[in-house]
Image (cartoon, rainbow, N blue to C red; front, side, top):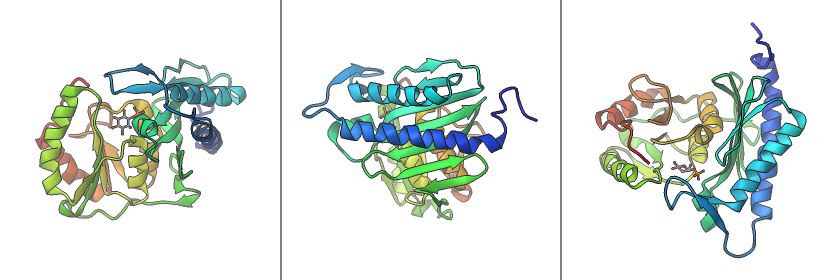
Amino acid sequence: MTGVSGMDDPGSWGNLLEIALDAAAAAARHIVEDRPRGPLEVTATKSSVTDIVTVMDQQAERLVVERIRAGRPEDGFLGEEGAAVEGTSGVTWVIDPIDGTVNYLYEIPSYAVSVAARVGDQVVAGAVVNAVSGETWSATRGRGAWLDGRPIRVNAAPELAMALVATGFGYGVARRARQARILGTVLPRVRDVRRAGAASLDLCALACGRLDAFYEQGLQPWDLAAGGLVAEEAGATVGGLQGRPAGEAMVLAAPPGLFDEMAALLAELAADEMVEG
Ligand code: IPD
């Protein structure tokens, strides 16, 4: 059945993906090409002094919102840097203008623009652009996931001891301390661990076989929306622990044959118990 907006018709999601790709690519060019020369100004901090916002995060979010709004004035927006518009079309754009802001600050070439379209509670299209390499991951719900236009799949599930696992840390001290303790138990059980610094890129790396699993507590909708859909459409299971959905308490993404074992290990460690951060 088609809802009032018609946007719950999967036939319309390809168009939303085109819009996401266009906006993400434009913002990615902006943050690289128009980065101020010299030290980058940190304009604000959020949850802790290391949780930074730069002038470029703010500009990139504005650029994405304005570009999409020009063609779709009735849509809603939810952005990491404050975009919060209800909208009346049934579509909400979920935006991380620079995922990996600390990498951006240090010029580590691993940061991305993430743009996703949500209809109701469901992310239906998403694009993640590595701003430096230009690598572009995309997905539409039910249609698959792509890297630079080529279809991608997660790896066949390895056994836990052979799994390359990525994770990330929150910015608050208490959460980080607990995440470090949990990692101390996870690390000896797996092949190795990576912490690349941009959750959307971790999820996309998993989607194209550069990782076997990813988990993190504390992710916000903009960290998860596009990358989570890419991972899911590439064949990953994306969820929380003990049958709960992925969310702030825990995002775990892995091929189905590894997900349960990883989830059991993390559940044993109560890795989804919320800690401020
Ligand atoms: C952060 C990155 C990082 C993750 C943090 C996120 P931001 O996003 O995705 O990898 O560990 O939890 O907050 O702040 O760079 O947009």
